[in-house]
Image (cartoon, rainbow, N blue to C red; front, side, top):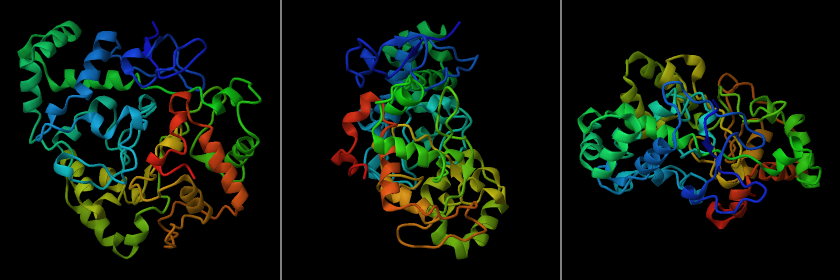
Length: 385
């Protein structure tokens, strides 16, 4: 039986209140342009579990300071990011090395975090609680103490998982959070209505030209996939696109050897990549120990990309135009640092004109779902341009 999903979508006759999650409507199928949400067999979706996950996601008691929750870096009114921050802020204003990706459509991801160090939403939910620069707990025991004694949680966990308070584990907690996150689904963009819905006037002329560039001269579709009936706009793979690693090129061999030589637990990798910029720029290498992963990061979805600035794993590119210029120059940052051919994953200049870059940016705006259209060009994000 197809799982019921809570989807962030505005359809015919629906009331425009998409960011109030308690008002999101249940659907039997995903929105236009997106495939059915994959749900693990051991974590089926129920409304009660989703509601519990929502509560856990927004509970700031799960941090050492009592003022940081999952939602601190993934705010509904900022398209489930933390807005214009280059890198996220955790307890006591501590900053890490990575920009907070949106969790919209994260249900389709086959790995989580920019370097893919987590294989599932359930596993991903474990990590921020105990990262020193995020929520800062030494271990998960304080969370278990809260949910085993809070009357509302006691009742909810018994209803959802049929467990007594002392039987609640982090597995139950992360399954509930993951179930909630799988409901944050957003499609039905102008692109979807044009490409999949046959609405010829859903996109502007500039956006249509941008789509052609995206699929052809710009070569964007090589990594940001568009399929016959759906588009998640990611290949799920890892690529070095010349961001961050450029500044470390003389040091890369030594840093990489150093990282590979010392065996690290997943918790140590978590801490190191968020606290040490040099380790952070190693990208996929930090996870796999494979030198082919040096400087490689996961291809992000670009749905709603116009409202999720700044860009790249380190938030170093403020606008979509900066991103387009970076790729147009063959992987040269806006500061002009050259990319080492050995490290750059084969990026070559695109030779786009300024007008073509404008059209590509316009197309990116056409990937915005109705519930986030009011954020396009918003001063909160410095504008899409």
